[in-house]
Image (cartoon, rainbow, N blue to C red):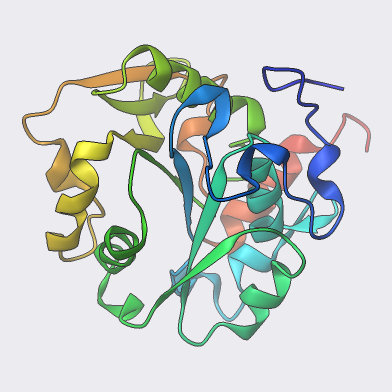
Length: 230
């Protein structure tokens, strides 16, 4: 079983209600000794291109994609925030029993920036923002960004594919989180990157650029994961 630094085993997070000791109590210190670092999973989108299906409830490795993303994030030892539209009973149910903090986004229909505004009202300290529809962002990928932040805490860190193509997640230093309150539209936090020195953090393969927005995306991705002859 893989370990995510300091002897924490990836896979221990699966039981309902699990909270790693690193996030217990009021004097929380994030993974690897990074004070107050939180992981934010953006899950307030409408799945508008899925023709009636919810991409975040699609099954991956025996779990809904949303629950899988949350359990992978929890395995880092960081506190985890999940943005959700209002209402979102099925998505909320998919997270049942997990020690995550739900962040309601009443104006999610106005674009991705609404999630960042909601996070700015909730989060303090550095924030690692990941998208819920990226099935190849696993615990080791998140750990790689967190470790890079420990070495360069004032820089924006952006995951890339192995060929250098920019992707997701993005880790924002604490000084940029309050500015999220002023974001608008559907371009996420792109405006915050203007003028910033952004350090690339390569991830294996195309994990950082694989997001699944349509039934065709899902079918192609699943076909690519099947063993030969399966």
